[in-house]
Image (cartoon, rainbow, N blue to C red):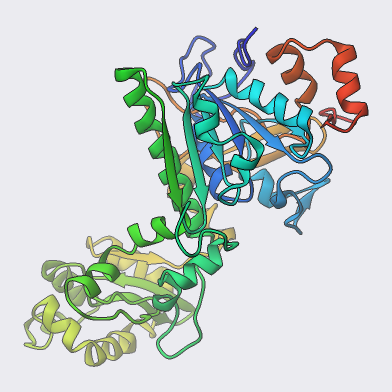
Length: 425
């Protein structure tokens, strides 16, 4: 019997959509062995799991994924960080420092479509779990390797996390207020984007396999991802010869496009084109601004930004953020409140998107998660299962997937090759 032969039972769709037991998912039947940890890899496999792939997460006995301990806050024995990144997965705890553990991992891969790993370059090769070793008996395998700096080059052996790569790759140099300290983004943006690139690469490789029968290796690094998402900051230097500086909430190439003070905080105003600047100026009570030669075009407004911003701020500070959001949104001018997390999930449009759903964990109880950003008419993503306990599915995977009997599994547990923790208790 192959791993995951039986479909997940009682999976639910996002609130507001009726669950249909016969509803296909986009990646139904796809099996992913996930050797990754922390953020980038787990984010990519969660995306694949949301689309219906069966994801088997291989973790270290005893500790598991590093992010399990990234709290507080925590729910029971595990951090909320981990819970937010690992839904729709099965956890099997295998000690890959043992020969038996590596043999089990190879057997798992033999029945899978995709492998995703995020070890330092060379680790999987030493274990005999690298692409070249695995493809000999599995030519259709899609193998995605995620690293900090790439699989080769002078930095390949350096440890690297989102924050370090954000610094080296330039993102931190353009984030923050002018003249202030370097600032990181509020979430691990490089990790998340790397996870998106990894998932995209896997889907592209699967399409190629469908056409040719051939698998392939997909490499993605945090550094290569950061370079790819620098967009205008990169082209500003490479094409324009200008080095970008931090702009605070402002935009280097568009003005006005930033936060402005209000009576009770700040509001985000923007005019990405000349017509919208005229609309905004009129809504603020100063239609004459659009006829001022300093502000008539975006190029002129960028040049005269230091003159424009103070006169806008002198108007916005006289009333509340809610007032300006109400006034400007009715005119079509871009505007938004700057919400904290507690306000984000109370926002009417956020609630309308219905993108928060409850998952049920037998040990930790019910908790809410943000679901997939995708909406697909024929194969909608699933909300599915809560993040697993460490080793929660070890016996299930070994028995149903590899055909091992209770005695064999008991021996592996006793010898510390694998670890099993029941869902509850």
